[in-house]
Image (cartoon, rainbow, N blue to C red):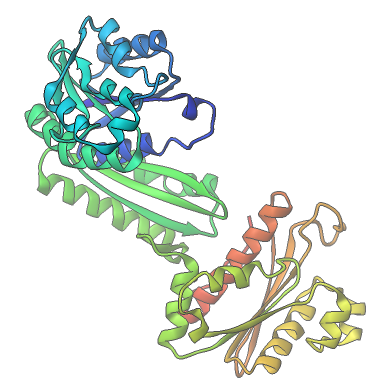
Length: 417
C-alpha cells in the first residue's frame, strides 16, 4: 500500500524539536512492505492541517498523522479533522471516565478536551488518555497518533502496522533490507561502481547516505513471495560485496571504533596514539567504547614541534628537512608513542587541517599517518577535501580504518577523498 505521513506541531516547523516521529513511522512502515510517497510537516493551523489531510487522502491508500492531540489550546488536529472531513467532534465517555479518575484532571480540567474526538473515530488503545484513533474516510484508513515519541512508537508497532497488514490483503509486498557501512569511497564513486548492479536488476533499490566521513549504503528488495525476495536480495548482496570488498566494514550497527576495540581485545594487543592535527579526536573515538581501558593506553597530543621533539623524541633534523607534515615525522611520532607507552601498537597522525598553512607541495587536507608494531612501521599520506572540521574528522576516522585493516590483514586505502 502507498501511504503518506503528516506531522503536526509548531515545535516542528520552528525547528525547536527534531521530527523523529516521521522517521520512525516511515522506516517501520517501509519495513512492513508499504511505500511512503510523501511526508509533510504542518504547523498548528487548522486550515493548513485540513488542506494537507485532504490532499494526502486523494493521493494515498492510507495516511498517518502524528501530533496535535493534546489538551492545550494549540493542539488543533481534532478540530481540523472535524471541519475538513465533516466529522463533528463528540464526547467519548470511555476516555473521559479515565481522565476524571486521574489526579491531574483536578489540576487541569482542560484535559476533558482529550475525550472529544471526530465522530466515527475508533480508539486504537482503549483505556489511555491519549489513545490515538482511526478514521475511515472514502474507504481509506487514517491513523491519528500522539506526537509524544514513545506513545506514537508504541501505537505504530502494536496497532497501526497490524491493522494495515489485514487492510492491504495481497497488495503488500515483502521487503528485505540491509544497510552497509562503507569507508574510504565517496558517494559519487560508489554510485559509479554499482551502476551495473542497479541496471541489471530493477527489483533492487540502492540508496546512498553520506554520514560524516563514511557512506551508509542501503540495499532494498521488494517481492511478492519469500523465495523471490530472498533470491533477489542474496544476488544483490553478493554483487555489492564483490565490488566493494573490504571497504564495507559493517552491515549492522557496529562502528569502526567498536570493531577496532574488539579486534585489539581479541588479539590481546594494546594501543597508543600520537596526534597532531586531530588534537585528540581519534582518542575520543577510541574511548567512546565502554571497556576501552582494556587495550587503550593513551594519546599524546603533540601540536607544537617542540612537543614532538621533547615528548615524542622526533629528531629536530627530521622536522627541518621534511617538515612536521611528512611520513618521516609521522614515523618518528609513532615510534615515540610506542616507546613511551610500551604499547604493542601505535598510530600517529600529523597534517594540515586548514584553512591556512597549506603550500603547493602540501596543500590543505594533506595528512600523514604511521603505524608502528614490534618489528616494522608503515606510513601513508592522504589528501582529504572539505573544511577544517571535515579534514580532522576524515583523518581520525581514517586512523581507525588503518587500524582495522592492519588488524584484519586487509589492503590499505590508496588515496584520500
